[in-house]
Amino acid sequence: SQTIHQWPATLVQPVGSPLSLECTVEGTSNPNLYWYRQAAGRGLQLLFYSVGIGQISSEVPQNLSASRPQDRQFILSSKKLLLSDSGFYLCAWSGGGEETQYFGPGTRLLVL
Amino acid sequence: GQNIDQPTEMTATEGAIVQINCTYQTSGFNGLFWYQQHAGEAPTFLSYNVLDGLEEKGRFSSFLSRSKGYSYLLLKELQMKDSASYLCAVTRSNDYKLSFGAGTTVTVRA
Image (cartoon, rainbow over all chains, first blue to last red; front, side):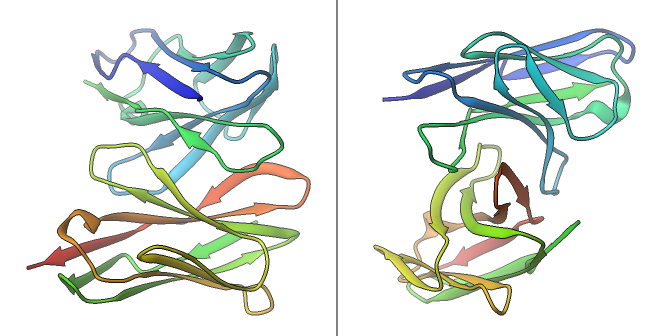
């Protein structure tokens, strides 16, 4: 069966510091991968998605970036965090010809 | 663009039925998902409707009317553990991205 991992689970970072969040998927090959952000009490906003290694599409302009160095690894980064980057970051995958997306446990980021 | 609307909050009594509506205006609409999200946790998949009609899965059912741009999620025999946010999301043809509504927070009271 497929599993998706994210780490860290919780992160507190000062404004202006860098960020690296990691997501890995097991039990599937060539998945589509997604990064979402959910602000407190808000819906999910798609940030990036990837259909293959090195292929990244950005949905919203921001100071975040994403990379996919391996088939089942998706990384969300920032060089300098802003207060507005605080939120719940969720990684998701889909594949096998299905559209259903399955979410990882998420990373709660607080920028102070 | 896409407009996905669902009520912000609903409250119901344990053992009762609650219906969560979702309306959408989506060009090239393909299908509609419902996810459940408990506070502080990730969303989990509940249902996916592509064709018109009702899909039943145990206590949960989901309905879709493509011509009306309307869906609902029906929760029967409510239990306390059903207290959560319920997210409506749509997909478009030839596009694997999901667009989410803001979610409906359901509170189940004893």
